[in-house]
Length: 188
Length: 188
Image (cartoon, rainbow over all chains, first blue to last red):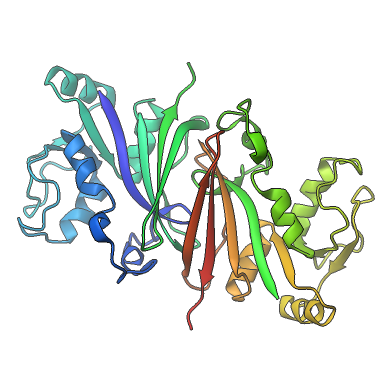
């Protein structure tokens, strides 16, 4: 099963401030420029390519804090697996089909393969780091906002070893955001 | 006077490992690919555009540790100003014209302007951060190596406030390195 990441960072590599805020994403670059067909910076095309989502508790709580209506909910009917050893149930305003999963990640992946899933959207810094350490992420699409935060929550946490990337592709957008796509190049 | 940065980072934004190592720069991407005319990824063109260099003590010591011969010395006759409050003299193998400077950065810039300098190459994480906090850096050219380190010395240290960037330009290279050029967009 393919596992990939579609995530935004600051130009210095943070996914949120230390306090977890992501409002800088709205202010970075040229928020009012005409984005034409690229308003979503490829997010909906990406979403159409995945058939499930695996996220961490913090990511779920962040999404939940937005109190999205059904119309605003970006993930459609995508099944969402939330990795947590402590949670029993998702927040009541968490709309999509959600399963709290507390086991080992490789066992979850094996199960999803058996159930016919083919491409998982992996989200949240800690979950992404765990998946990278397990050699499970195939592709990373990183959208860099043109802003330096100076500190914050890094995209990638502590790795067991350095991880090489390859086949880099880059897009620029009219709002001065940059999108970099890498394949992950694990040792053979 | 224009101040700019030309620096390499990992794909997760580090300029060195925690121990200060930069050997991953040699291993990242496709080290043996034919780079054609782009072997230096624009470094010599950049170097030709600056007329002085301002670095920190750690950066000087890193360069010094390479024990470069005159032939290997990349900075030609570029005058180099080393910011340090403790050093009295540069290491004996530090080749170019070096001045240790222990005063305030804005006073150094004023002096360099009076002396006719027009474009300074600012290098080293701490010095870059100080210059950004002083609103002195106009342009950043960041070459991202296709590798995740997971931890290390960040490109940018603690900022007084978030700093917006604009006019992003991107290049990709055959070795899967990416080069992003930003102008710094300080509040008016």
